[in-house]
Length: 557
Image: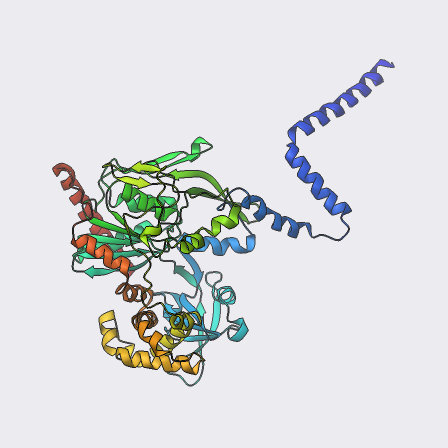
């Protein structure tokens, strides 16, 4: 009779020991350590601590220790961080700029909610519902908070307009607003198309193909793809863009990660519809990630020339994961390599994150932006393109033709009026005063005919600057004359015709664009000669894709 209770007691004790054994082996020692530290803080720390707030500060620092591009995204920021790359968001559909503590409408999205109710470029938004958007409330954060919202919800906007003595009221129903990544498309000359891509979003490849097809229909035989300032985005969009220009069987990029899922290689499946077109790719120090995939694929396959300045140097691939509380992390899961085997990622361990972020400043200080002679190529990291040309690793894509930043006209006077916002403010004032005359203007050529003569425009600006506390220093004004006029005209063009016109106007005096045209006209850009059979196939594919793209573009308009 005593044996059963004894065995039962032994069984309980054994179960407890077994439970303890499995519990301790199942819990990672690092996790156990973290739980212990947090428990001690919560129970013993001398002051009251908001543990949730403490952890929110901890997560970014933890991920930041891994590399410069792994990151924690708080719940409050995840939507806005993701929207720009998803192709659309819900809002009223205006581009704006804050000038003199006032929200100025720069561009109204065609077909968007704001256009449907009659809001115009040049309008000033004074209030959204009960929120005053002037003075200290005129911040980007406040405007986004009040104008964006759930699709189908209504917001009342109080508008000031140049042609109305009293404020105007508009009830705008928020709707889907497309986020375009192809900012500008036009012909530089009769046979050269220009496409500026600002980011690699979900819709970028479709936008890019439609732009190329439209330019081809207008007579383009060569192309300039401008990736300056493009910090990247979705890698698959860069791959699809590169496929437009590469023949069948060419490598675009490959990745290496810790697990097989993150090891991949992208190879073209067919001849691209523009595989036999001359191509120039423009880059600068802010061209990163997916921009470098595209530029590296074109350069390593000898399909075109890279022109401009050395790119940023981001060769790490991130995967974004949404956490249970709707926050997120972007974790680096692989490195990418160009077809020649180059890793474009610049060093980031030595000196930590501060040194990594200061790399652009270091390039500037060393004169890399302004002189070819200041650029030191890493001779220990030489790779070969498909035809045996030397290209260099070690951080960023090094252009085939380097175009230093243009310092012509850069004076202390220009820097003062530019940094104080006076160029932008005066341009907006001119656009407002000419709004009635300019409302039917549809092109840069028409705009130039309406605008004041250069001397009149410059003198008016100098008077405006004097009235705003900047003395007229004519020696420096004359040196900066072309730069000031170029900036004024570009901003006026943006206010009247939209952002695409802003880029087009600036390009008229852009040294990198001029160099691209020179190289194309001189026949320096490599041209691929496809085999006859493949050429016929590519031509048929091009015609098919072009007709589809043209139809797609037409349906959107």
